[in-house]
Image (cartoon, rainbow, N blue to C red):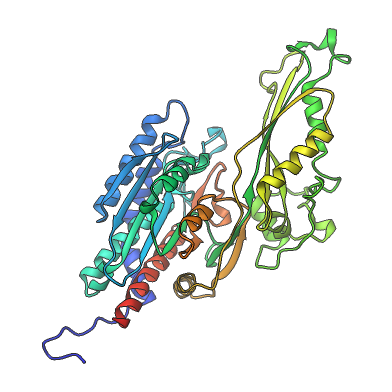
Length: 473
């Protein structure tokens, strides 16, 4: 019972409170994101070492300014991970906030409407490489930390009792092997009760969701050689075996006439039971051109059946003679990277073996080398835990609509590594990367309203987590 000498308990923090606090932060969020986007922080790219180091230094200073003692840690792959920790008071949990500051290459800048390294606003969206994946999430965490401090100073001192860990990675887009090694070598840096992985997104703008399933990844690289060197196509073409044509024939065996995976043991067999886009929505999200069919529709497969519930095979890289440098010569070498994604429940190494066996069975008229590239396990979340339920409620309260459980065909190896190290912890995957963001593509963008909503939900989750403990003490 409160006495006259005791301070009155502060009113519970409401969705309106957190929305207002984050709204005040949005000019700073835009400035933060603009400064961070300006660094072309593509890991392991010659000539960009200084940009990566400068981006890491920016992240360090930004989180220190937000009240978290962080340090740069150089990992085994040469990338810098920013690590921070605010210890929890007795009885309070520790929450780890994850994001990454490295980005995909911009690719051909001629395909961008504006400079990929300059934050540019058009029609209400913010454009630039990394605005969504994943520098926008760095800005989200910073906004939340500043707002958390404001709430603690404004009558909610219990928020200071929460334990916080910060992990901002520098090589996620190149596999994240440095961070995985750091987790194996120094697991205490990652000790937490809940892992909040901000590197995903809603199925549509303004539709709250948590991602509960990810596919695994098990790519290979195949190289064909037919002749010792390119030879004149007039003198030798027709009899000399063309390495590129042989590769095209080989790649053509990976799918059937309807474009579905044809590799034995990897063909589509199941349907996705969760939420997912309609064919029309998927067509719009993927930018499928008029006159081109969405695959699977003639075989009663919805988009999520093929992008989530079953394996998919994509050629993500091809080396031979380029069109721009075409010469009258028979190519003697051709290579391709084949991306294989597999759903939860499948072993990626076994699936990789199935792909390799298929390539070997269909060996063309060429010498063939197959390199197995690094694999990543699929992920399936336990949705029954209190932290995930609290986050889903926070998202629903901020967006004022129910939170969906969705799946992604992408892979984030860190998810399984964290839960292997801390099996009693909970992990939630969410974020600002809705389909219109076009992550990994030209004209990547983010909607500031999505940044504001995700930041508000993250803040509300933290506030309610602290309040629940405070009420029981």
